[in-house]
Length: 181
Ligand code: SF4
Image (cartoon, rainbow, N blue to C red; front, side):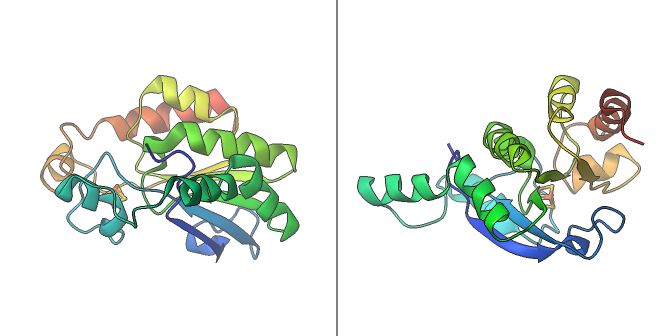
């Protein structure tokens, strides 16, 4: 549904992701779409992560087919990777909303970016299956898992998920699957 339809594409300092020991002092091309598998009451990006759930529509203008196809063309994975390359930006972050809900689009951008020597970063709530985790580490270079609390109650009450334990799963699987230090 959101493939090829980013709602936010910005250049940020890498420290804003926040990553402090990965390409420090560089810029990162940050990309986000709509939706999230959590519903945190404190979400700073609620207008892109939650509005579709509330209103049943994806926010934004209604586009004619030609304009939509034109936008899609500009947001094709290869073109986003090219945008980073031509601006000498060494990494792309999948961020703002939860990238797990648009894994397919992120992966296509990421694989195109790798061909240009650009690194890939996930900023995620970590709520994903072991299968998705094992697939992600084949093309990601860094991950920021946003740990929201150390107990299930918080996840259930504030983030509105059934079980908070999945973040443990992704942390536990990601490191050995990737071979990262
Ligand atoms: S996981 Fe992140 S993007 Fe999703 S609702 Fe919570 S704070 Fe917002």
